[in-house]
Image (cartoon, rainbow, N blue to C red; front, side, top):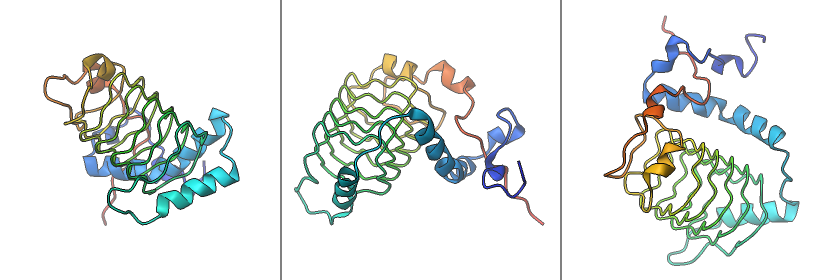
Length: 218
């Protein structure tokens, strides 16, 4: 790969000495490689993209100004797999049963959103705000939740198999159980509710994406 290739800066051997960088470097790394990761995911999942009108409606909805005590809209059971909703404001949106497989919701605001039985398989929610969201029985298989805020979120019977919880705030998450954590992936930065233990497998797990080398000086 040429040295000026856009991925060259992020491709570091999984077991190199750079794996012990600070949270600052880890956060920079996933931001740099996030676009390439999302492109790879879209190419390889094979799911149908949302129709233009559905994607457009979601985009407009996600960027409307927020009004107190007003829902962002009812999208219950909508088919919006692969939607691109970076930074969208979906506060208190009604998204129960929605298909958001492979969707991109990086830094989206889903405060108080209803995502009961929603399918978020493989979706990207890095740094998303899920404070107080209802994710009961949601499918979060392989969902990327790096540094997401799930304070007060309800996760009753949610499927967290392979979910990436590195740096996520689950400190006050509700209805979260030890078996759910045991099938997820996280690290020492993942904040957990009192009474739940960090699975031993998390300590041995390698970061899920390549890390960038530290900046050089001089």
